[in-house]
Image (cartoon, rainbow, N blue to C red; front, side, top):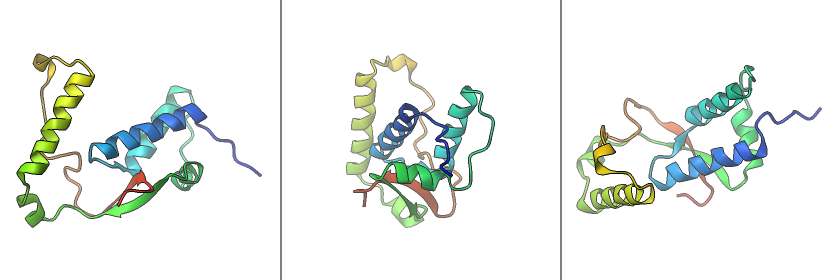
Length: 133
């Protein structure tokens, strides 16, 4: 028996585009984040049934250009070795986003310099494009 796909093709495409954008910014999507967004999309449609335990594996099968992988937490010595190049890359990306979305500087606040993996201690499984190393 074939299972019915609960998210539309367009909704899944948007999930994929969202995860690729976050990867581009250097913040790959954790599996739990992907599942949370998928659940929220289903709730908006009135679908309250939980995702199955194999939902992520089936989503990856439908998107063969994506994969999951484990990423270790940032080692303290690496965190202390931040360099001007990586910091410059961050601010170039920040400036590009400000320009792309015509955001006024007075509308920017609460910038978190620690990144999205705050309070994440162990290895995490994330979604990335197949060609990501």
